[in-house]
Image (cartoon, helix red, strand yellow):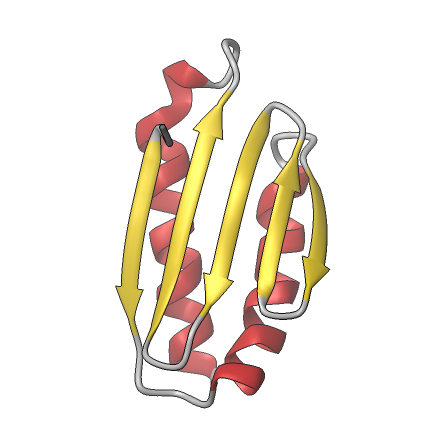
Amino acid sequence: MADIHIKFKHDKDAQQLKQHIADTMKKEASKFRTQVLWKADVCHLSGPVTGTLHVQPKHIDVQISLGLLTKPFKGEISKNIEIALRKAVKAC
């Protein structure tokens, strides 16, 4: 089960939004030495922070599992993801 689950609603074009999110996720993931790999509309994260970010037509579904060393930062990670998603949606 994921340590962090975020369902973020949006009303933007999913493909355009994906581009904005891709740039943002790359920056955020680097803070935790996490690799980002996109397959279609799903961003796969691997490293101390693992999970997926799925850009869907009406919402973004985020499922994140934290490693032992990143669990203490759960609140900060969750907050940063939500802020990054909000900025990406606004910029789109």
